[in-house]
Length: 160
Image 1 (tube, rainbow, N blue to C red):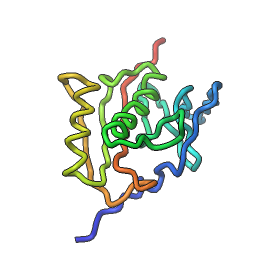
Image 2 (image 1 turned 90 degrees about the vertical axis):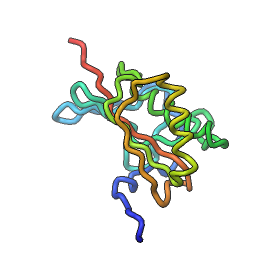
Image 3 (image 1 turned 30 degrees about the vertical axis):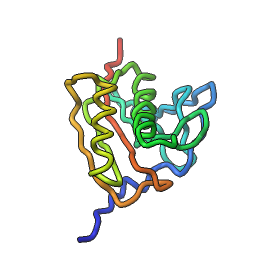
Image 4 (image 1 turned 135 degrees about the horizontal axis):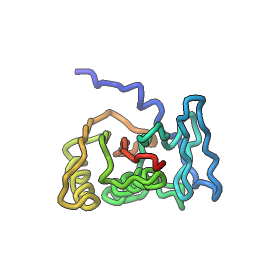
């Protein structure tokens, strides 16, 4: 059986560096704002960390890259945790918490090995629940031969 290849994986980061102190957000003609929060990572390719469209924040696939070191966290649990923390930073920059997640997608390169760790980290970060809807998919390969990538959609109403 041939593995399924998702075209959205082509937008996975090629490398990352720390975000400058001043964010340079851009807004589309329809009001979609590109997000580059302070303390996050910035892409070095043709993708953005996230966007805000109305009351929703969309976070791109985050991996376990330490933004201060611009390197993958070496241990498995730490790397999975960092991927979620990188996503959390972007959501929180727009006023959303992890509890405001309306959808998560997690990509792992080995479902048997990494799904239990993803579950453990989610329990650590979300507590006893409730947990957001989540899809977890095993993929053949991630950028830099990484093991996990997580993306999320968050509800964060704009205060008038």
